[in-house]
Amino acid sequence: MSAMTADPPSIRRTLTAIAVAPFTRRAWAELSYLVVAAPIGIAVPVGALAFVTLLGFLAPGPAKPENVSFTGLAAGALVLFVLATRVARRLGSFQRRLAARLLGERVAEPPPYRPGKGVLGRLDPRVRDGSGWRAVAYLLLKVPVAVLGLYAVEYWVTGLVNLSYPFWWGLFRNHRPEVHLSPVPFLTPLRSGPFHVATYPGTLLVFAAGAASLLVAPWVSRAVVLADRWLIRTLLGPGRLVQRVRDLEQTRAQAVDDSAALVRRLERDLHDGAQARLAALAMNLGLAKEKLGDDDLGQLAQIRELVDAAHQGAKDALGELRDLVKGIHPPILDTGLPDALATLALGSAIPVEVTSEIPRRPTPAIETIAYFCAAELLANAVKHSHADTITIHVAEPNGWLLLTVTDDGVGGADPARGTGLSGLAHRVGTVDGHIDIASPPGGPTRVSIRLPPHA
Image (cartoon, rainbow, N blue to C red; front, side):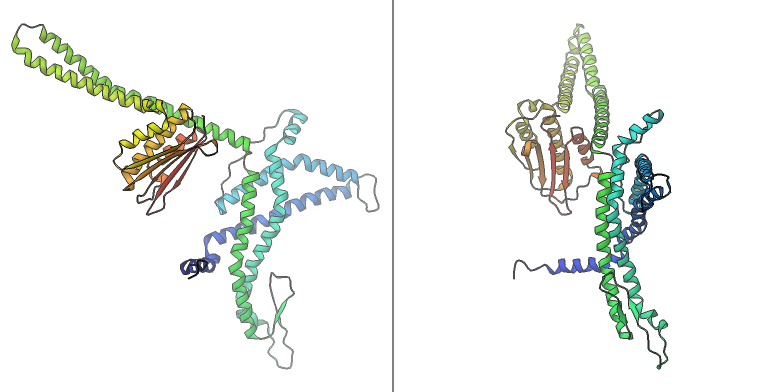
């Protein structure tokens, strides 16, 4: 069998997707969006042009043979220039809400317009309103997209009309044999001229053409909607600089919250753990000291028990303090991230293979984040994956630190189920890192974390 032969199940799935496309909720939502958005996308620029032209005809001034006043045209263009960003912002807000409701495309609001005082104070911010001018650009680029959107709607209308052709065609026939029967034109989006149907069997051909038009219509609509969604994301949302500032504000707030939570956790652990054990140690040593002051040698056994308890308490307190220190900054990281990951792998209940390809050390903050991410991913794999082997690979492609943890377990890792992956995303986001999770049902699970070389 040739390697280029398509897989029959794949062909079946493709044909099924084509056949059911006109009946999906997504197809009808995209059609509804085009029905509302396409006429507006054409009407707004046409209305603006008509406004300027009307002022050119009505305004007084030196008239040309065409009776057009260039003074009026200039005044209309000036008014349009002043109001362009404000009107475009309102229409852009409407487009964002419409796309969010019908397409599920949610785009953040751009920063609000902040007018100054006085005429110049109000005019200057509008001239320098980047978000407003991007909205104006959207309205201009929307025109060809809106035209294509109307053409996509025509596919739907034509398909539905043609499907009904065999049912209503006979109502328009005159059945007197002495009168010539007038054919009914066949509606088609193809501009090759009307196709006339003079017999009922011909309506079946129209029905087939209508079915074909409906099968094509969802994909034409989807192509137009994809172009419109790209324009909305690119031009109607906040600019790159504004979005960057918002991301930094969110990551800063997350970092502050994480720091506060860490401080509270350390205080609680010290109060409930090491502090309590050291207090018990002090009490036992105080009782032992009192016993040693007695002359009764029969108290030696009790003194030995108190000293043993104090010794054990001291060892437990040291262990807890050592764990707290590791939770703040593992000392093994002082020798480098590869050695720290190797030490982490030695304590795993599942065999772990660690490979490293980093020519130079990242900054301590990045090393710490990478270490704790690896520790969390390793703990998740041991607890949930039922894997036989785990691999940890750290490299430095294109100047970024890339940490990849892979297991051959059952897969299905989902950040929404509270497996610690959402916390990792917040931790990585504080330094503008990225996390990518690939965990299909049945495995394998592959989590890749990209971190900058320095925080």
